[in-house]
Image (cartoon, rainbow, N blue to C red; front, side, top):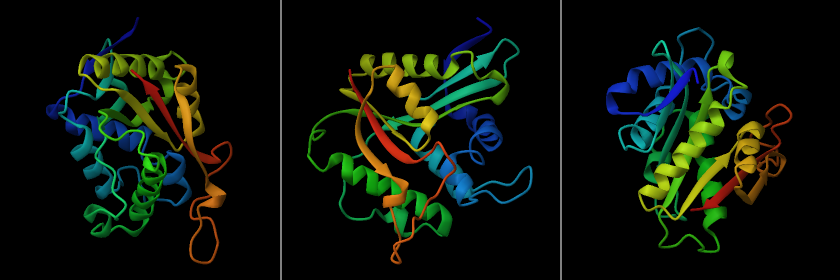
Length: 216
């Protein structure tokens, strides 16, 4: 094997964000369709970086795939699911980036739909937030390995479920292959603004946000 898996710690923050700027922020289907990231090689979304850093770094749940030369070639950012709320959280209301606020509102909408039946009440749920692989390292099973190791860690730490809100068709395929169950499906064409127009229209095959869960 020409790579290995390590837990991400707080000292990895700059390397992780550099990786995400290059391989995730611009290409993720929702980010891409609303042009969240401005043009320019080093441009980014500060609010998105803060969201990633706050929720997933230094909690001993997030993982990186590291090549023999020491470069990050893939990563998975994980966190613990917060108790569901019907009210829009303060961090969404106070977000000053109008485009990123749209994404936060979509994720909150999905969260309300997933938790509507109360099936995860009093459960410890690990959320898989971001899964990304260096474009030149894809096809080597890195995403699958990161997911499998994350599930292993979640079991060790007493989580009852692993959950992934897949806004990308491809991350959904990884979950399905690993035995996750699709429990919520939101077609992007059905998520509309006040004028009835879809808020997100990513390119095919990204037609829906699907939540997958796996009982641990």
